[in-house]
Structures are given as structure tokens and as C-alpha cells.
Image 1 (tube, rainbow, N blue to C red):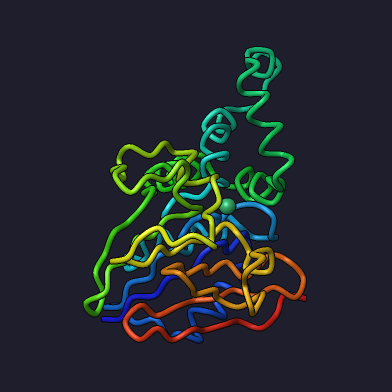
Image 2 (cartoon, rainbow, N blue to C red):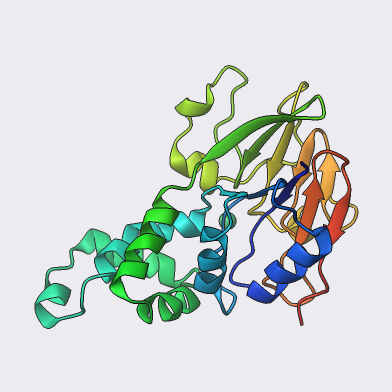
Length: 238
Ligand SMILES: [Mn+2]
């Protein structure tokens, strides 16, 4: 009945399955994935299809899923000349933003699916949640992909915009809460200035930052067990 958290798989199906073996995930364990399964790495859709088969996985939405959901529903339709000419500026702008953020492996994996599977993938990504509060072993945790943009201690979770939760980076030098831990992905710990062990999970000021850059060379996929605090790491990405 253990609770694990990982984040930012970014298409690394190899690292994802390596981690499932390392933590030896059981049917009655729960695995939270804090978003950004898609884009950058080679096999994002394969990871999504695997997650969809796992009833004990709860996936949160990252900015990459948010970008994908603005474009993929349109791309389920066959690319005909009239379909392309009907695309509006908003779509084209969204698609350009997504393209500069490594969408090609997601598109490659998506295009080869049959239409029924495409729709199931869209439905799954659309059903991802933006945040999760939970208590494990008497400790409270707030799980979110990126951070709490425009934070205020009085702000309710439902008052945060999607962008404030999936794009705005947490300020890791600031303690947001005294009574709970904020668990985030999105920002590789290699890029957190105050992180003493870049590339490993950052834990300070009631932050737990778990993106260890699985999709980047010398990065790795990390997991934390909330019951024990134990950390787990895959091999480095080549
Ligand atoms: Mn992200």
C-alpha cells in the first residue's frame, strides 16, 4: 500500500519501465505521475498507452499535456487540404509553441494509432488532474506539476489558473507551507540554484522537487516513496 511519485518521464519508456522494476510497484501501491509524460524523449505515446493500462497510476497534467490538448483533437482529423485551410491563427500559434517544445515524438507516436486509440489517448490526457492533496503516514502533501504561480497563502487551489499550476515554476528558496510538503516536477533539479545535489531529488523548505531530467543526457528518472521518504533513481540517460 505504498505511495510513490515520479515526474517528467518525457517519452523515456525505457526509464519508466526501469523505474517500475526498481520500485517493484505492486497492484495495491499507488503511483502518481506529476505530468510531462509527453514530448522530447523517443516514445511518449508508448508510455501513455502503458499508463492507461495501469489502474493504480494517477496522472497529473503537465504543461506538455496542456500544449498537446490544444492541438491533438484537431489532428485526429485527416489532414486534407480543406481541413488545413480551416485551421485558425489560434491553433497555428498553439501548434508552433508546442513544436518549439519537442512535440515531434508525440506526433510520430500519435499519427500511427488507429482512430479509436487516438480518441482513447485524448480522453485519457483530457482526464488528467491538475493537483492532488493527500495525507501519507501522517504527513500532508500537495502534488502539482510546476508550482503555485502568484502564490498567496489564502488562495484556494481552485483559484489557481491552469497556467499557474502547469507552467509557473515553484520558487524553491521560498517555503510556501508550514504544514505540508509541496511536491513538484517541471524544473530539473540540475537547474535549481539552491540545490546541493543537482540531478537528485531536492528537499528543502518543505519542497520536494523530483524532476531529475530523465530526458536529458546524464539525467535520470527519480521516484520518492511518500511513506518512507526513500528515493529511487534509474540509470543515467545516455
Ligand atoms: Mn513541465
